[in-house]
Image (tube, one colour):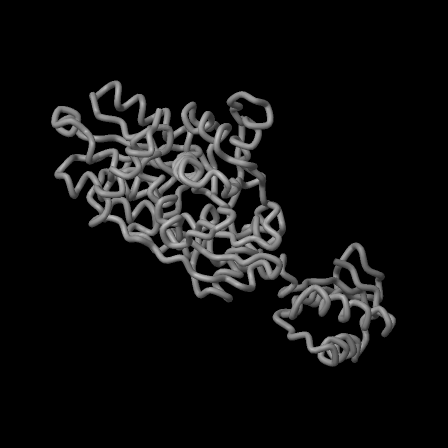
Length: 398
């Protein structure tokens, strides 16, 4: 299926194309572990996908190149294929889910590819790409289930071993499994004692479910803010490699992913997309056994849409206790709202917004309801505000 020599060959091909991204310390991600970040979000095109796509295209025959290439993608593979094809003077057509972030769609076009938007998710884009391949004779560049693509992604494993020889654990995002297949194969072949953990979104756990059942599983629906790993079914090659070389696959929730994105922005000054941040979420929320271990979290990409980022930050603030909303029923008379605000101010809460409603079916005829949103420090701060309001005689509802 794949040999370690293929990964070393890919590294040679990619030497002047892909960046050797830095590994940087992240001491606050998990105080019980020595966490570092492999920053593939700073890769050319903003994602690791350039590695596998470019290497695959570089190995095509002249006849395959002449037919032009077609690919399907949630966005990042699209950019890698577009750049690789343009560099090699090849026509490229990319099928993208219609709901892909606009930033990824426009970036793919900017690298020189033609884009076909397909209603649905990645798997629907895949079906359309196969249809067009069969109709027009294009050469298909699979986003993950291809030995050449896997070898290209495996160059990250070689870099981690070179940059941090004493690493003890590596945490890798999983969508279809191409990235972790290459990384795990490279690391386990050269250093089998190193642990390799995979992470999926709990809303798209196709590889986790497949490994648990011992056979490839197809999910009818996937839903997650991590659009780059929203894959309904893993590949045949990637399933086999993960089953053999990956120590454990875990899942994280959208709220945990959002908290990880926020932590990377605030603590590391790094922007990661949802798919890229799942490895950090797994470390933050102790999903894998890394206590006391020197651990590398692979941030696979940073191509997040600005509008999505705004929503994710809001979700992350709530998950980390930095934002708190509550409802209180009051008597409709002067000074009531002022009393609530005084309690909040005494506890150090910062009011973001207040909504005052007199007509509410759940409140008394002579009463009113206020909805207040606060900026808070953490969950302990929220608890102290709630206790102070309750102590002052107010009935707080979330």
